[in-house]
Image (cartoon, rainbow, N blue to C red):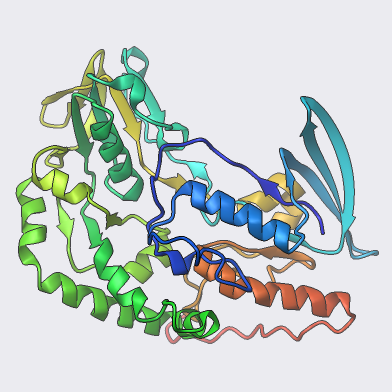
Length: 394
């Protein structure tokens, strides 16, 4: 085994994950079955991961960072340079291995923060959500959150709970709002205590992505049709709502951009969290933000929950250089076969693999990466299907 890099951040967000408990189990067992609440906290996850790693004797290095790596084609071997911090001292370790699996944060790992003129003269706090911990120090101040997807809602709700005097979300585009109980109802028919986890995983992940998309839309949008007032209340509050969304496309092509409603929508409808959606943000003042129509929004704290950019392929460039980067496939998005690009399949360079996505996806698909690695180490590599269908009009 090479290196597993584990980064743990102290954070107030989210209080719980947005997926049900049975979606989050690790391979081989229901390792969260003893927990009686449905929505796992970050502490539940940390304890569960640590216990599982100990049980299965997974060798994990924390406080370790891969700095660079090279591939020796003649020996079919990687050489990795790893920086490790132990008791305040930094050590450099050199490792060799046949295979490297990159699990460095899915398709998007670089914070995206739009630039607006005048930020340098703004007298308050400006930060991206990646740096957000909590709002305890801002009690009584005026908070603004730029963005309206999952993280933005979590931060806005956290600000409200911390006693921030006013909380305003700036919405830049229409947002799909998916009540958590809608997805729970669908998932509970598949992920539950009486269905073997292997059966549940095959049901969720073994079919074509296009079929999963149609089934999911039908199951979720039917529930939305039955509650028109729930979404109308958001519209009246100024929140531009997409009530009939396409969750699978959002996750597969944008890796999000929706809001799994865990309670913040009701606070928006009640006016506890304000929404600014009628004009485009254009610049800062010393004590707030200016919009295209000239209106001024007072602010002491501005948090950008504007997502991330990048591609797991970027990690190849960072660690292994341009030459290897040019040989490998992109990660995430939809390929010509209608499936995820680069995920859990050969990347285009020997001994290099991508793993990412949700915990359920990783649980199911990681085994296929492991089997391909094992077959190679045993001297009997599996044949790789590489034919790309011809699309009419190309």
